[in-house]
Each structure stands twice: as C-alpha cells, then as structure tokens.
Length: 396
Image (spheres, rainbow, N blue to C red):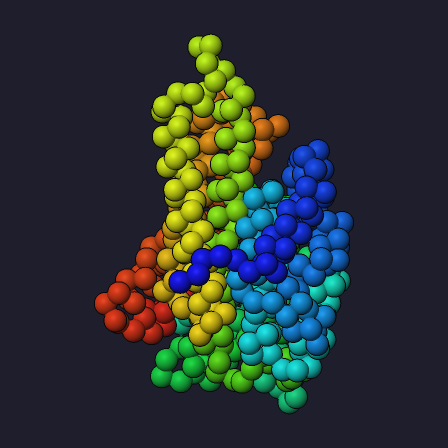
C-alpha cells in the first residue's frame, strides 16, 4: 500500500496553502465574520486556481481531478480558516448531483458558471419539522410541459443573491408502494417567479455562509429541469450524502489541524511559572493525543476519498470518516482553548471561532446517531434500505 501523495497532489496542496496565506488575512477574516458577509472577493479569486471546479471535466471548465484532490483542497482551506474555507468548499454545493445524474444541457449551463465563480449552487432537501421521506410536503406536479412546484425548504445553504439554482427534493402526486418511489430532484433557477428567500438565519458558527429558508409558490419550470429520471430522487439523495459526508470529514480534518497549529505555536512561546507551557509533560501529552487523533481522521478521510476515485464510493468509509473527523475536530478545538486558557476565548486568537465552526460543520450532514446507524447496518450486513426509507436524516 502506498500512502504517499503524488507530486501533482503535493503541488495542489502547496498552491492552496499559498492562496490561504495570501488571501486569508486575519483582519479581513475578522471583519467578514463580524459582518456575517460572504467572502465574495476571495471566492472570485479561488476560480483562478480552479478550486470550485477541481473535479469537473475540462469540457465544463473544470480541472478534471478526483475526489481526493477535493478533499486535499477542503482540508487546506479550513486549516487556514474554517469560516472562509467552508464557504469555498460549499461554493459548488450539490454540483455532484448534476455531475452524476444531470443532463448534458444542465451540466453545460451550470457547471462552467460554478467553476468560474459566477454563481453558487445549492440543494434544498430539508423541510421544517420533517426528517422522514414519507413526510416531505414539497410537491412537484406535472402540468403540460412544465413542473409546478409548491412547498417550503429550510436550512438552504448558499441561498440568496449569489445562488444560481437550487436542486429541490420533491415528491410527485402519484406514489408507489414506498415513499422513495415518488421522489424527484428538480433544478429550479433562483430568479424564477415564486421563489421566495427569507431573511438569513444567524448561526453559532460558519457565519459567513448564507443559510435561509426558501418558499416555492407555484414555481413553474420546464419539464427538462428534472434531474435524471422520474423516481430517481431517493437514489440521487443517498449518493449525494456520501459526497457531502466526505466533504464534512475533510473540513473537520482541516479545522482540527488549524486549531492544533495555533495551539502548538502558542505553547512554544507562552510561559507559566517561569517555564514555557510546552515544557510541561501534561501539555506534551495533550499535543500528542491531538496529533494522533488528527492523523487517524486524516487517513480515514483520505482512504474514503481514494476509494471513491478507485472502484467506487464506499458509503461505510464515508460515514466512518465523517463520524471520526467531526468528533476529532470538536475535541481538538476544545483542548486548544484549554491550552490557551483565557486567551482561548478571545476573538484575536481565532480558536474560539474554530470551535464554533467545528460544531456547526459537525451538524451539516446529519446527527451522529444517524451516521452510526448507517455504519452499523454495514457491519451486520443489513440493508439500510428500510431505515433510509423511513428516515431522511435530522436537519441541523
């Protein structure tokens, strides 16, 4: 087994590190967080490196790279700053659905715009108070050559002025014996009449990342806006969750490493009782535990990404990477605050923001017990078809 990155992958990591050093200035980040403002100018510059379309085919203005390269980029971005990093990671949120299932026209229309930082993309799955597929209330009715969509979605990432479209999970009026047979994904452009975006929602972490409720009031889109075939929404959803859980794992590894970097730098120069903090064995052991947990999370995440590029996505590994990396990020950030003492709570030292962002990222793709259910089902060889049919996932 070869655990070494290729020269090209190492160059990608270095390019992202250089980008972070040049653009993620502390005063800029602080100002954006305080204003809860999307880092538009940094997002625009990221397309110069090909970051938003790193995994898109070159025919769609992408770089033709794989899932592992996306993971490496997400890790380095969030290592530099979790808030801006996550905004850039989610700039193409939902694009995997178009790549896997979209028509050529849908890809040709939207993927180049995402790759060139012209628009953000998003998905609209969650609904207020809903966690089961059978309870989804957003309905898409076929009327002539159009879909007419009505419903309300919550926790829609990237909603607002910069978004180009939402991929909306809907149910058809006709239902088969199982609720997932009535599910469709429909692409809805954000400027369509009837698409109503509510005010943004204040969050504990990831405050730059726009999150809104969206109402769909008799939204009429062409029949061609269906993503894939009718009745494929459930399969597309499960496929997307693998990618999104892996993205969360990569962000969490980066957040943990970024917090560790700041803790290590601090204890090397800060003194207590006439000695540097790093000279105390208890501090050394804390750092050793943190570094070990981070490396374990990194290897599990890389393995899941490598598997996706070499033989197919492994849902079990993606869930395991998500579970371990999110726990590690939160634990490392908590320990970092402890090492910094009172300074850990101060805005200028950044680690309190890393802690808040780690908590928020950990909620992005379902609660831990849902992730654990998914892992357990694979351990006992049980099909999770029934469980997933009954439970979509818990929204944040």
